[in-house]
Length: 135
Image 1: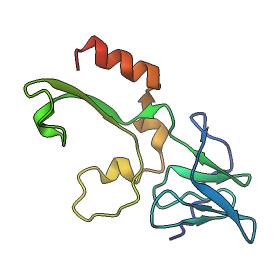
Image 2 (image 1 turned 60 degrees about the vertical axis):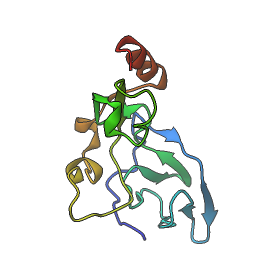
Image 3 (image 1 turned 180 degrees about the horizontal axis):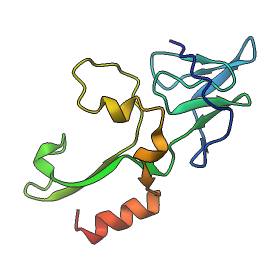
Image 4 (image 1 turned 90 degrees about the horizontal axis):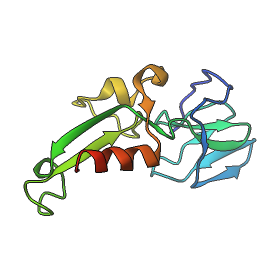
């Protein structure tokens, strides 16, 4: 499914080379990450809103950014049988390839103004925060 979101050809500050894509005809690229197989012209974003064709390369526009952090009880997560009674550091980023009508996070998952929603979240920083909070 294609989205015409030629919002900007400017490379986002949080852009990072993406994997799982290939070039196709008409100077487009195809995302191979999910079953939607988005076929994108230069500047277009996929259905997830966070993978974008920039100059013929697939770029992840939210790398190292998070839409929120929370310390949760492990029982809320699919890993609820591991370390019962412990805490887990939950975090996520903007973007989603689904379009659920009941989504409680639609404002984050489909936002075109992701910069105001995201905080810095380097892989090293996330690991350090988890260790600091004993999660």
